[in-house]
Image 1 (spheres, protein in one colour):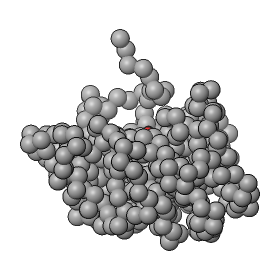
Image 2: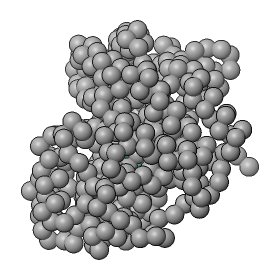
Image 3: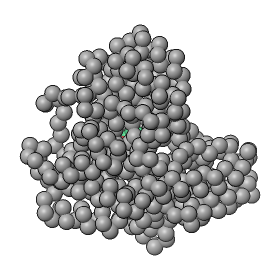
Length: 386
Ligand SMILES: Cc1ncc(COP(=O)(O)O)c(C=O)c1O
């Protein structure tokens, strides 16, 4: 048997990692500006994190959710404090899609309704409900298309209200910043109006912070720039720094009945020890502040290059060119040893590094990008537009 290739594979195979770098088997070092898809928040193989996992595995890695779990209790308390949601409950799962699946299920349970509003170009995962609210027919099978979802354009508040008025809407789901689409941030006004309309029409507001959360934008959650307070918030990716954990933060007014939610592996001792150490390092190394300052520096420097558009906040950045990034990304990886991410916009590079990225590493990337663009021009493989 061979592994199923989930994505087109890159030409470099990392076998070792530390901080913001990965190495291939020949010992060549690569700067990781992809962070394994926004997953590596505190840096690869952080010693405090690896010790916490090793110690917990040696003490007790797993027991079922049918007993008190002190590690889970401490993790939830710390996440409540650091995120600014100390009065919410935390339901722990294993992935982002599972978090979305459960958040939408909770919204439907709480409101007794079932229509969902989602935002065009958004991405929420590949399980049944998650794919039903994702605006990408390529990843949905006929069985996924039975769920009633309306997709509205980001910023189109009147379209949103029309659906809320005419359908029995359980939830509006929106990413803190759209990631896979190519880094598109909803405006403060749009988020605030959406929150108001959800209240007016008795629908729940679900903020998908799976990619944009966990300090990546300089605040714990991207929606906190708009000062809103969603009913349900989904988290995953950076939460475990590579350990597969996800969760739903649940507003105190939502009270799931016993049995509605359940999981074998969500919230294990091992997962919670990993999650706890991520929070500890985020705080002790001031990584949210670093994401904000290094991100601002990077965005400012990138805007000096004659690039079509630079979007984003903190260390969640989309760099859009007037041409496909395919060749550029290959040059960056193979000649300048920098990993970068793609997006569903073929002209947009996605930058999602560990939150510990330094100014020197950011500068190396900007210089490498400049040189790569120059190489492209010399090769005349594409015509480079401003
Ligand atoms: C915004 C957002 N939501 C949900 C998901 C799904 O997460 P997972 O792949 O862990 O199921 C992703 C994954 O990329 C995402 O970016």
